[in-house]
Image 1 (tube, rainbow, N blue to C red):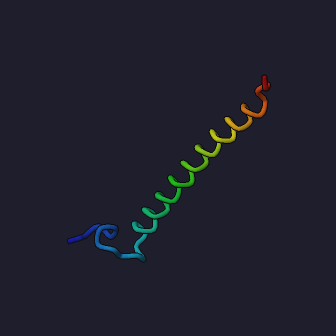
Image 2 (image 1 turned 120 degrees about the horizontal axis):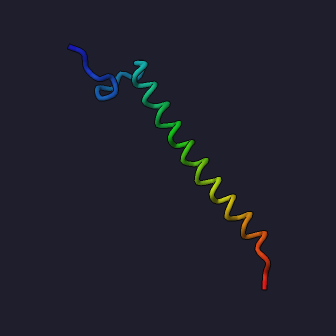
Length: 51
């Protein structure tokens, strides 16, 4: 019987390594998207004329 290496904690399994890389990729992607929006709003705010 084959068990899921992620659920049963085999840290050297390729499935576990892929799972961890997938989580890291999604965290980096989310950070880049939020950072891009922040930079966009910051640039728009700087270009807006002051009254």
